[in-house]
Image (cartoon, rainbow, N blue to C red):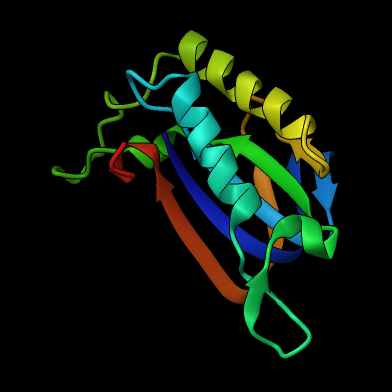
Length: 149
């Protein structure tokens, strides 16, 4: 499972001119579910996101996690994170099939909502537009298969 995590001042995801999710300070998470991913991959990604200490403390150092600043999450599915770009036209065979990706996306959302954080989301499979103000900018790439466990 792959995630692009962007620290934002605000963000909104829309589809067909309608707002699907909107947050203030927090993280936008573009989530790519790959073939063979499991609940353990989703748990790893969520644990890392919640624990990332990239918000400024009183001294201006990146030292605080999401909960310490009252931040929110805006999460949506992004199968293109598993693109094979060895050719000019990407292949997405590394992405999980839609039914499996939806199951793990929903799982991650449900687990995130059990945390002490506001969670907003996009709509799985929809054509969406993301509007955000990246803070820093701070952008972190997470991949559950590279954590060594």
